[in-house]
Length: 572
Ligand code: ADP
Image (tube, rainbow, N blue to C red):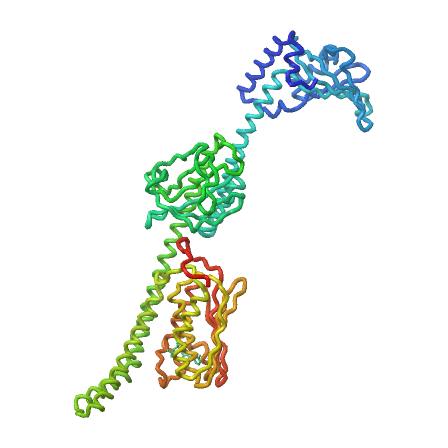
């Protein structure tokens, strides 16, 4: 009895009526009748004693062809044609004290037509009246057509739902604070809310003419960072996008699907939709079906196109914002450099007075002296002062240039190699000065750094420790790495720095020893501070006069060093 073809096979004599029903039903659908309604069962309430219908739901009225008033004038026997297969068709269900008759029969409509149904009939009491509740399931061809339509409607419904989700996703994308955040969100929401299996978002870098990865979804369905990947566009399909092609590219089941190492892990359906801002190509969103292995749904290219268009608008907004920010930063760094130059120029008058006087007097004496030894001594004195001036000028210019962010080029760098190299460059000086030395070799960690500059910062601090520690003193270099930070520590048993001076030593040209008895320029710590800050870190000092000082460079372990970085150093 549960055979899906029940209606058509068992009751050939009702075929004509069924056909009529079906036509009526289809014409209803053509008038956009709500399909959901047809999913309901027909319900009738019948008076137990008289067999008169007391109530019917809307779908029962509609399918039986009576108004709700008309149907109340009917007896159930006017409607229910005797069960076709006789009494045997009635099955009695006794489920948890509910007794129910279940049977198949034909129901007669107002115009004389019939259609097959399955009935569940049960005695109930309502408002003190004994009633029979009829729960009737339409079993006609119309019903199967309805089922198929609902199935299709469901598919469209999925699309409508996705479009609705697209609107909501758009709103969430609007809350992204940075371009990177936006790309991450776009990939995640595209997967979670728009039903794409896997997505990737690529941005076009106009300067390098490269497509650059942002985020994607890996072969296990997890978000994957793809900033490390980039590729040229000249020999790919994407070139169409760069020339203004705006419709998604749909590859059928032969498109290669890659893992995070760019190895092909399979072939499948693949979609790419471009992001444009005005007529400029700014990137594209791609999607594949690797996880489900299913062909793309018909609506997915269009959905991805709409999504890419929306994401593109937000990307363009962030790109503009970031370039405005860069411009403002440039302006700020220019201002700072001009300010620094002003400070230096005003210092030059003071700082160069002594060496220039020495040069002047020495040159004068040199011109008058005939003693070769004396002449050599004077020449060496002039040379020494010129050296000093050179050093000051060089350091000043370096300090000014380091205000420019583009002076830094970050790469994955070995911490150990970096510190080894800085230590090696000063050990001779320490030995010459008769200092003892403890060096704890750092753990094999990599960090995002401008190797040359960061080594310079460490060297400045080591150099100071040597200069300001007397013979017999001790210098200790150690490194600590925790989950978030790297701390490079240089401890000396030198002359120390008074509490009031500890802040000032990081200022331009500031030296505790104002009498300039040491050869320093007063820029070493300024440079070190600037370099460490450009790495997202900071320098701190703890010092006690006549006991010693500890300088610490604290660096973040996970710095964002941009999409171009590759690890070039050696881990060991
Ligand atoms: P300089 O070229 O004079 O070394 P820096 O900017 O490197 O300039 O240092 C500024 C001043 O900080 C130094 O002149 C010195 O007075 C003080 N200083 C720096 N490091 C130490 C140290 N380890 N011990 C004592 N004083 C120090």
